[in-house]
Length: 141
Image (cartoon, rainbow, N blue to C red; front, side, top):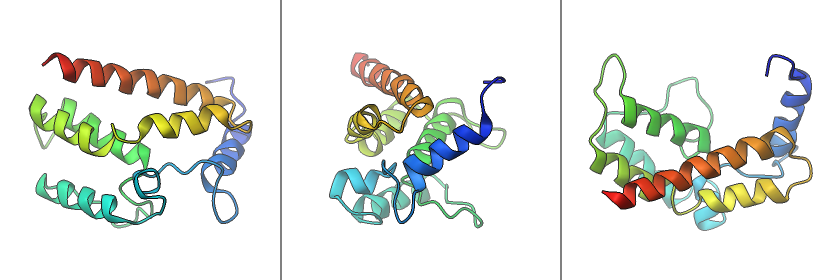
């Protein structure tokens, strides 16, 4: 990563996920679950987050159902933080199965099919493998 062309990575991110009007790949749960942004899955997620005492920071403009935000919530549930302990395995599994499992594979498939993805195709492959491992791990409990 030290040798990476940061401008090229920034441009790839913009092309893939932002674009003019919309990027080539849409990294939001609502889109994959309903075909639209800002739909019922986002409202349900916000309710789930509120029940855990979590909310979007005031200056953050991305909706909470962005794949990176969901990964951050999973990180917090798994390892906790200075101010909160890790969640139990049941809560981790329920959050994952409700908010990531139903759609992550389709997001990664879209990344694999997109010619503009180079770096993020690799990132997508890694996260696909990681999430697949989560599915298997939760099934063992």
